[in-house]
Length: 311
Ligand SMILES: [Zn+2]
Image (cartoon, rainbow, N blue to C red):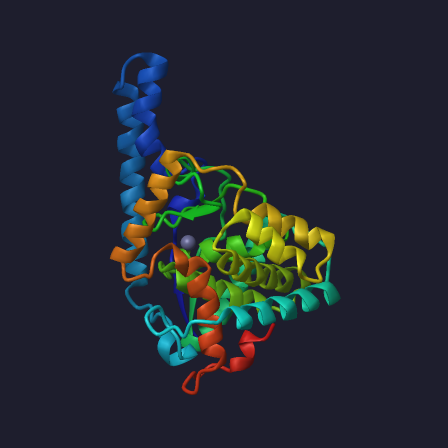
């Protein structure tokens, strides 16, 4: 098996370099009333950041990414839309499986990160024949938390820095897997959602399988409710779920609070940015992701077994 190591040295520094580049001159001006020392820190961080990114870019040259259309018979522009009836059937099936296989076990974040990274490497290698070795470091904060207040996690596409901002309980393994897919080079949201789901769902680890099912269920409910919090809770209440699962899906679902104007505006910018990069917009996280699994499930041309999409 061919093995490609992406060093991602920038992910191992004590503070995110992107934060130092943006924040050091600001902090220096605030604390020392002069931007001089901050600019020295910024220049150092920038040098390391660029150097790390250049080494990663060089290492990535031989990577063969998954051809989604060939492997799964589905990609961003070839999705077959699910009907609401199909979504409700899927929600019911997922709920029943989750109740039968419920586990309250939790895996500490750092430990989960190592295992999830290994699973993703294996899943991708089974399709492409290449092991893409990437960092499993995670941060609790980066400045992108402020730029994207609605985000649960983030991945800096240049440095590979991954941060997880919120405790999403049973869903957290999926959030980590999603960001780690970006780190492995899958920058499109639909691709990150799909690989994260399939790798966790087929992991054989009860905690990770639970996270994969919970994400798929939550995303179906988001589409069925049009992200309306009241409709979301109504859909949720109609399912045979344990209270623990219900609690996390509610918490991670659409918020009752009216989003601020700034948050709304940033969301629109983000949606537009996604469209400009060959994606369908923010809907790829939920509608696109669930339609992808549905399309793969019914594909006549996929080279991967369609049983990967089982509930
Ligand atoms: Zn993402």
